[in-house]
Image 1 (cartoon, one colour):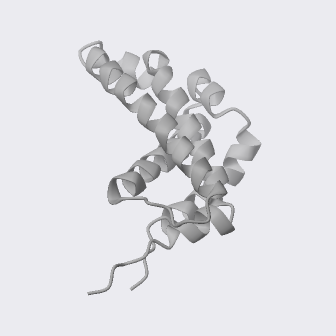
Image 2 (cartoon, rainbow, N blue to C red):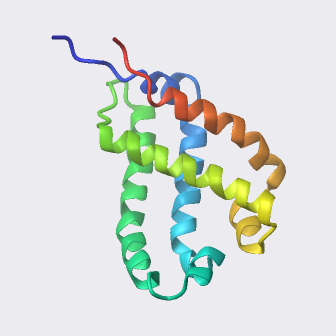
Length: 141
């Protein structure tokens, strides 16, 4: 049985996909760091706040490791050693950024507008995110 090859590596390295992925990971990290200010958390009550903050603090170092892993793979000619959990983590970051762009547009909450930043660029990023989500899930047959 032949091993499937992750084609997302081509997207990361040769097609510039690393840019939107690193941007999404940084956004995800900022989102987790500012979780206390989130209108969603404030509206849900304090019941889950401490649990979410604990999980956020555990996740932030993973984000830093993933960014480092991506940047190192750009320098290295070797194949990237991404496992399913890594791909799932990248998906989570991309969908977080995508979701927050929509929340900024739909709600106009200052929290999301500040988190997303430049809305003109963020709207352009939506199409790139869709491509990234598709490409990082491609494997050879």
